[in-house]
Image (cartoon, rainbow, N blue to C red; front, top):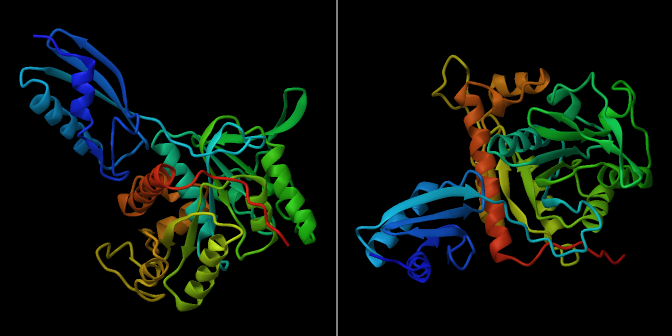
Length: 366
């Protein structure tokens, strides 16, 4: 009994990635096909480390080989992952970073830094190489949430230039203005100084190879946001809100900014934070303190996916204050929503890279 590589690829060309809606051969996901007698071995490279369709794709591959090549074939399928990228810029800035994700909100106090921190750690937990940049110059939260208040980044020499080395902690690389100044010192800077600081935190940091760089943006829509889109190609933005109408009104402005004709940065979806309050003593109870399903309404209105609904529970707040983020906690009531968020964002990045225009640096004309 003998098979050919062409037969195997033809069979696998009938297996579609459910998210990307293309067959896995066209997507170049089938690698290392080896045929020895009646044994067929190959690797399927998924586009995200925690693909929710992994088992479904594996089963579909097995069935395709059995039906279209031979029922007697002994099939060995290795499922691996390779995070995709759609960067088509000159890569003068952050040359080894595949995807840059901005986490934004229209107003402060909605938990944007909590989402940024746990999203970065959740992606790292899945096996991705992740960096976390705290770009909220006036109110940096990363040092406290990551338990880094006593640490300072070192300087390293890269190609003859002095660069800031991110602090590696909990499996990810982190940098914040709060790591470079006294934690009690207020940052009293005008807009141009803030924009200059953002440039330095991106260009003067040795980020190295990353699958994802998560940028925790300041609230609102202003100088920092324009500086960022003009400096690096943003893969997409994640908009954080609470279900409350006043938060939703500001979140709409954040979506609107990234959708403007001059900017056109894809919005990956909406995260609804503080969706309901669940007491520790009553884990099955939900109290909708800030309203119900506001994030879902915003997502529907803007034609975006709802990436997650995150509960308001004491362990999330406490973990952020104590430098022990929710996604790394043992209690699944606390960690599971952020695990799901990370998987969903990775999924949306893969869909965006497969189906949308390449990322580019924005040229904003004043």
